[in-house]
Each structure stands twice: as C-alpha cells, then as structure tokens.
Length: 324
Ligand code: CP
Image (tube, rainbow, N blue to C red; front, top):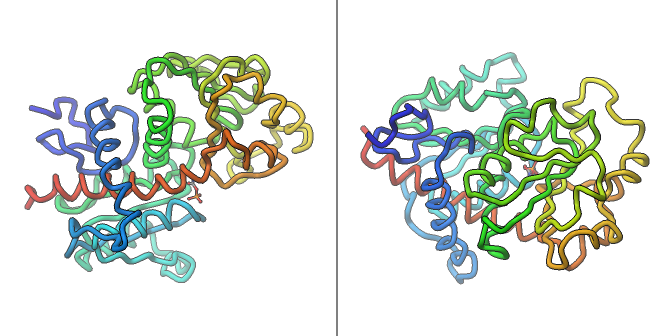
C-alpha cells in the first residue's frame, strides 16, 4: 500500500488526489511536482502556449478572498493545459444571499466539474470540502485562512531550486508576520521535507507563534542576527486583516526594526535571493530598492506560479484517469 497513513491528499496508489497542504507530503511527491513544473515552464515560451493534457476537463476557481497572483495564474495554467475554466465571482454569487460553502460546492459539483481551486478565509476550508466531494472530484487549496498555501510553497521551492539546487546547503530566513501567515507554514513544511540546512523565523515576538520551534525552526527576534549569513530571505506582508488586536506600535516602527533595506541585505550572503509571495507593501516590510533590486526574484516567483499550478493540476488529472 502506497498511502499507508491514509493521507487524504493521496489515492490508494500514493498519487496526488487533492492538494491541500505541504504538511505530511513526502519528498517524492514534492520533487515530482517540481520536476513536472520544469517541463511546463517552457510552454510559456512557445508561440502556441498550450498542451492538450486537460482537454475535456472543467476546472472552477472559487475565490472567497481577494487574490491577484493565485487566481490569475491558476486560470492561465488551466487554459495552458486546455481545460475549460470558470472563475466564480463570489461577490456576484449566491454566497451573498447566505449560501454556505458546502452548498455552493455541491451546486457546482452538480454541473459536472472535475476540479475546484478554493481560497477561503476559514482555516481548514479546503480540507472540509475535500471530505465531501465525489470520488472523481479534486480540490486544490488556493490558501485557507492562516493554515496553508501549498502551491505558493511549491513555487517558492521551484524558484529556490532554479538558483540554488542544493537544498541541504541552504540557510533560509522567513521574516515578518509568521503568526498569521499560511505561506510561512507551508514553506516551513516544504523546506524541512526537502532537507534544508537551517530555517530561521525572524520577527517581533508578538508575530511569532509560541512553540514554533517544534516545526524545526530557529527563532530570531532581532533582524540583524536573523539575516546574518543566510542564502534565502522570504519576506512576508503584515496580515492586518487577520490580526484581532494591535500587535505592533506602528508601520513606521515596524519598518525601522524589521524592514528589509539595502544595508540589512548586506548581512546576508552576497548571492542571497530575496523572495516575497506578494502583495508587497513597500516601505513597510521591504524597501523599494530591495524589492526591485538585483537580488530580488519576486516577479520570477509570479511567473513560476503558472508552471507549478500546471504541474499540480496535470498530476492530479493523471492520477484521476484511473478513478471511476
Ligand atoms: N501570493 C498570493 O497568494 O498572492 P495573491 O493573494 O495575489 O493570490
């Protein structure tokens, strides 16, 4: 049996059925996604940016929270795989009349859709839906609350691998609002599974969850020591929409203590990569000269989102061919 723990994300053959979290996914699956993405990355350079892998499949984007990058790159990725894609505008949907997530999903399922990409403010929303859908339907998590953003983590791993393929040699600093960040959690699981040398989380005490060391990270509350000698810096946005109370004195004070400036960048390795999942807030967590500077790979992350999302959807659909 290839799925002995009964991971809901895998089918009985150990192939990807849903993509909900990087927590508990083994190295084999992560590498398979990264390798597939490698072959899909070149599709965007062709005159005809399409492959026929998902012809006849219907994919629905259900975004109950705002998104620019994830929603658009999922849509482009599905079209490049020749799928039929529908993005539901939640503000114009029956959600505004009180329809539950479960009823919305079951309504869309009745239209014979094959795959749903879901973004929702509730942590666990994607898992909840994955337990309800019919066996031939797959769920991809486009970000749920503060829980997980697995395709973001994989596109981050893909971008790191393009520049620094030896994960075992890397020191990675994740900086900012760790408490409210689904990206931080998903990146930590993926980085650990891929065997990086050291993961640091850097930020004010009020934005670092108690006990996070149990995920295999080192905590730094001082920016200068946290950045010293690192190969990769992943900056995070302050997730004000998820903060229940004031956890910071002011944005100016935050930038003074934790903003990534050119001066602070010099503490890291000379060939350091600067990453950010976006959207970026210039002058709050990152200086414009760093965001637009030569060490930044922020826009490359966006481009890589298409290849990673193509890979995830193609692998799920490939596994699904054996299902009823
Ligand atoms: N990184 C990310 O999830 O960006 P969006 O919110 O624009 O999708």
